[in-house]
Image (tube, rainbow, N blue to C red; front, top):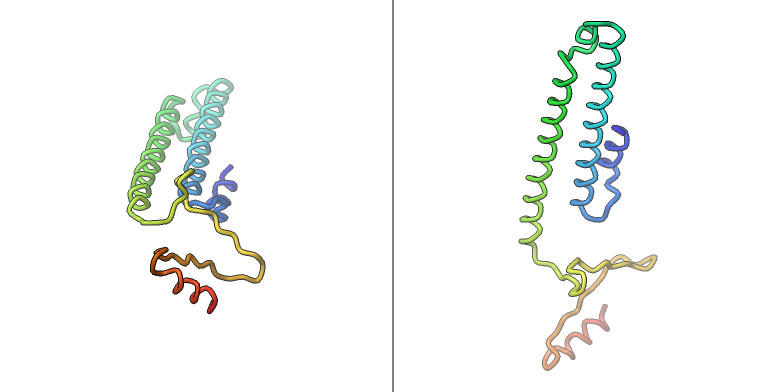
Length: 139
């Protein structure tokens, strides 16, 4: 689970950075929950078989301390993600971009093999049509 989280952080498989951050944050929370559940189960199993030895072996005073600690860590991770999401949303909202009316997302532009650039040649129909045509022919 931790290797997958690190892999997500390094590979960034999604198109939008917000999705990458969300995936890493969710996997981090999942990892913390898994560790908390594992440590609680292990603590209880050691306490059951060897009275009073669990604290000496694991370093935790009780299973309640493990649950509270993991809950605080999960809450902290979620708070950090929420702050990051709000900041990212505010930053993205200020950027002016061309967006599709239907999805409100930036258009997905693809290039054929061997091509490097896209061009959006905008003009006013009444006065700029000839100039746009000349630019198109030159390019």
